[in-house]
Amino acid sequence: MNRKRIVILLVILVVLGVLVYLQIREWRHFDWEKFLQGSSGLNYWRILAGIALIYFADFLRAARWKVFLRPTVPHASWKGLISPQYVGFAGLALLGRPGEFVRPYLIARRENVTFASQLAIWFVERAFDTGAVTLILSIDIFFVPYMRENYPEWRVAGYGLIVAFVLFSAMLWALAVSGPAIAAWSCRRLEPFSRSFAASFEQRLRAMSSGLNAVRDRTSFLQCSLLSLIIWVVIAFAYRQVTHAYPESTGLPNLDIPEVILLMGASIAGGVIQLPVVGGGSQLATIAVLSGTFGYADTPELAVSCGILLWLVTFMSVAPLGVVLARHEHLSIRKISRVSEEEAHRRATSTSVQPR
Image (cartoon, rainbow, N blue to C red; front, side):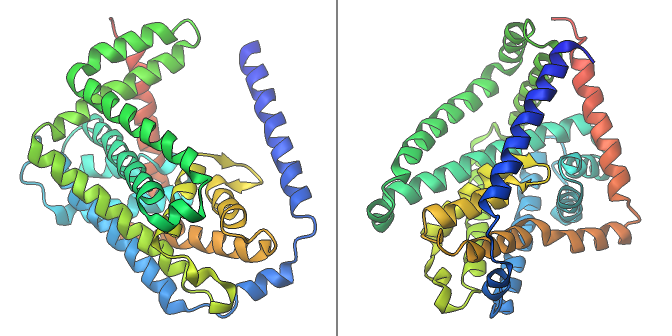
């Protein structure tokens, strides 16, 4: 390990140590008895309804993937794309980041196409998800009257989202038109700082540019955009089912779709960060919004209860179904995760030695 990597590792360890210390200090007086009380009286029918909505959202992802496959596999069956969605998200829930490539790997094997082509579609899928969530959050912050009046502090974030959405759309257009050239230019600029990162970044840009070929025609673009918006609206309703599962006395049922969209946005942003010991950033971000924005700072036990339950319903609930489907098809999620991650790493490595 060279000196640069040692320094980076030490910085990461120091930052994580500070985060752990702050988290322990913050929860030193946490009342676990109140936490259990806050989790009592739940309406489990609403929780099951939330899980059903998450399952439906993953089903819609299969329909969207069929649109992505249209140029290369025009006769792909959407039914055959359903199982890989659930198995893939189960791998992500159970294994974390190493499980991210399970879905494109399974679809590539099932449709008899290259893993590289499905990895490209996976990048584009994430782009559509990012655009849909950004648009929904922007509308929520600026066009819902009582959100503007009651939560003015979110306007700054809203302006940032609008700028991000415009820049993101421009980036996608540029990649669709001149993806390989942009990827090569970016790699040349980044190589002096880190050759491996530059190669990996170039590979991702090339993959996204390649995947955007799947939505070049107007019909496919509109279908994918509409499906992406529907998927995230369905997920927002799943969040609503969870908050409405709590007793009226907690005040959580008063959080309706506009409020839970903020929770959803915070959860997605926090989910980018995975903190050892402290836990997933998704739960922490959700708890922070419940406490700081919605007034649960005086009852942190209730905020923690809701944050954890949202995480279980929206992220972990797919694991049982995914495991059952994997066993039914004689698949090993752990083995597929390892193989797909190795293949993705091999592609990133091979990109670094391609002539430019």
